[in-house]
Length: 397
Image (tube, rainbow, N blue to C red):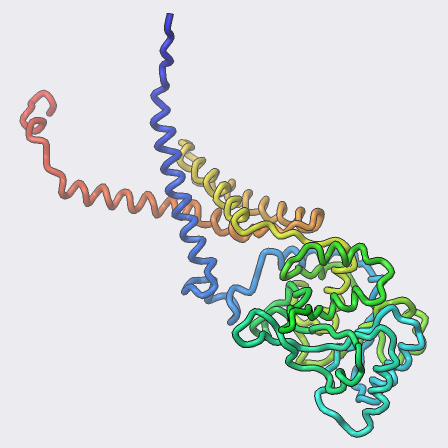
């Protein structure tokens, strides 16, 4: 006997509900997408800095992680603050460091013009082992390659000396420094390494981590800022701590220079030399961040919002509004906790900003949908013709 399945009458209702939830989710997606545009006239652009929406949820994760009572003293890098030292004082610093057997020395100072008495400085740089000199690069006109924009005036006279680009990948000086560029392709096809990469590869006894880092091949790498501190010395106490410079990467720069202070995820004012130190430490750590693709972030946001909206359409309780708000707030909190967990424990950056926005706009999109649907039905009713057959039927009345 052939059995014909009997479909439940609720199937069409479920299908309609799913399609309606999908439509409302698409509306929430559109609202969120508009708000996420950095140059759109929206609340985000009004509240953000002049460089667009200069805030990410990862800044919050960095801030929370860095506020923990846990910090690691970096064992590879030492920072020397030149303070108010003139060129003769910097030469003395280099002479002292050269006697301590450093693994590498990074000089984050540009001497753009010659001055009287520079002979000692030039000789100190020449005699300093494994030194990396800072350069600034700029994009060559009409190409995607780079050329040296600024460098110490006597760099070329030193012969085969290692250079490193000190550029930060930002368009505005007030932009938060979250990433660094590992290298820049020069006009001759040769790579100009970043200051951090040049130092990490200089005289390194263990090339395993730097090899892994280069193999990633990313144009930009996220800097790991949180819970890391560096030994910092001044010219006054450098000799007393000379033994602590042995086999270390010594980075020399100005910590108090107002022109070299930048915003980072963990603080609003960090000296450039410390940012380079954090970037170098990130390379040497062998632990690098993996960023989830933008489309994957949007997919997570879309699915989360769809679930909330479907619940909104399915629940028929008297406390529906209160329950939905509780679920909405719970999912917002859960998104932040999950993002923080993956950021700290697994080095995975999930941009839950999209999810937070879509969850926020989800129920708002429901209200918009219902409002427009009601208006549309009202307008349609104004133009609908009355059914005369029903109007003249006394039994229907």
